[in-house]
Image (cartoon, rainbow, N blue to C red; front, side, top):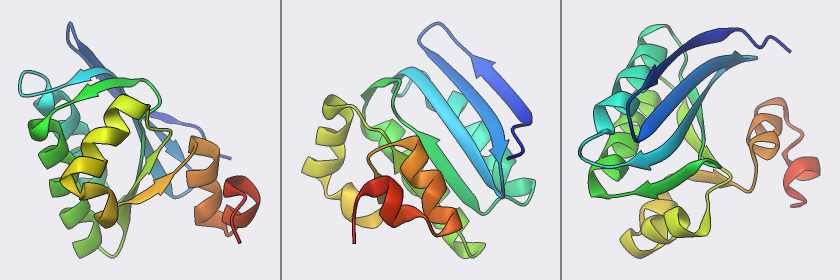
Length: 134
């Protein structure tokens, strides 16, 4: 698979890495996503959409915290990706972050995967293998 690095952004509490994985852009935020750091995620997500990636996979496995501002960044990206014929897939959420999506009901509007591998396999039709679902 093509694993070209698209870019990264860093602040004291959030590091965002972006890479190409097949026809998806994989965005990996690490640290705390809140009103102080939200733009560090918003900008790479919007850049990916502007570059023609309509399928965004957000690897949440290193995301330690997400508040309502961070949630709104992801919801905004989802709307733009869906308007372009794609979507936003969330992968590997830690329990503390998953809880935010659960209590707000946001988990119902995203495609959520247990792992990054499962999210990437969903693109190629191997989702049953990776998620263990039927």
